[in-house]
Length: 294
Image 1 (spheres, rainbow, N blue to C red):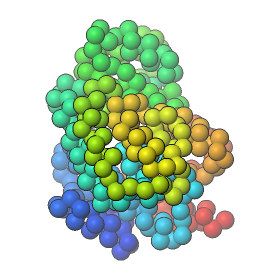
Image 2 (cartoon, rainbow, N blue to C red):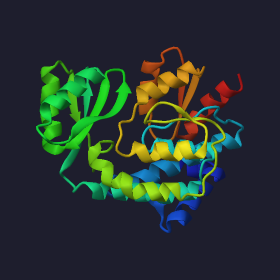
Image 3 (cartoon, rainbow, N blue to C red):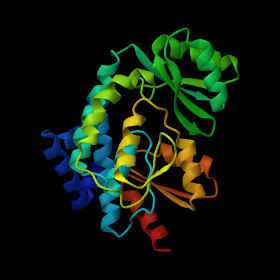
């Protein structure tokens, strides 16, 4: 991922060079070539996605395209903060690598899981989790909207909650290929390790508001932005509420910047009247520029 951008645009290549220097290793090669099993380790996945997102963001900025509001889903909130100028790209790369490591170390590999529940609302999913917990951790981790809620917790509890969700009428339950159960109480040790490091960053007030995952509220000062990132580690991502907040603030155009188009699909379902574009490759640039120049 990101290879086509780096080959086509020097500003993107420069972002990957900066990422390699910040981490002291060739992250760009991992992004461009894999192997996939190494890239999917969360301490590699997190800086890799951040690097691709910021490379794409810098290209848009070089063309005079800048956001009035920013938001990101989970790790994407770090990209949003870099785009808003809260802290530097290099610092973000280093801290998300540690974030990934702390998250992985919080729960032994193979003991936690996540699953997407399709076709139930958040209240029904909460009911399924409560009825299936049996003393274990399982709860909503991503409230994505459009009838999609991701749950996280211990493997057995997630499996039980998935079965309970089906009994309550879920259309599908999809086990997710992740290495840890993010955004649930099992991540509290990671949150506690990350908190002092986030608070110690050289950070400043964001240039534009960041609508945070934890409460869908705009963060306009540095302290609020940092505390939102800390709380996010073990709290659910309220993506549907984030998009609804952006819509209520008058946002009518969204550009998903970085690899993939998952968020674009969710935004279209949550805010159907909006214009939604994705930007992760050179082929996407014309559409974004055309819209910007209207």
